[in-house]
Image (cartoon, rainbow, N blue to C red; front, side):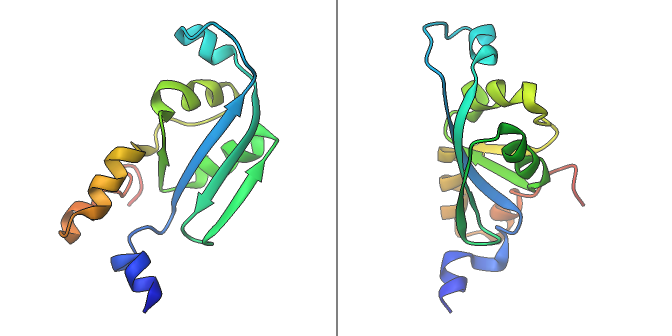
Length: 121
């Protein structure tokens, strides 16, 4: 019963939520963001209902590349730029945390199905 409340329709299978921390710098241009080095990352997986900490960016990217959908806070504007050099694939369907909260809070099953990646059938 608790799972039905936390995960209605079981549509969060394959969905991960993550954030990274990087080295500090004053260059916040696109190239400056791409040059940053990931120091650590935290990922929550709905499949395992666990948080994991990553210090190796390649291990984090490997997990992200296997996800059906990625939820992040400012991922498109920062995290994905940092992780691109470690092999992050952009064919995945991702949401900002605000878009995800909106979709997850809708009452329509059809709206939540939109979490599915267009490339995965």
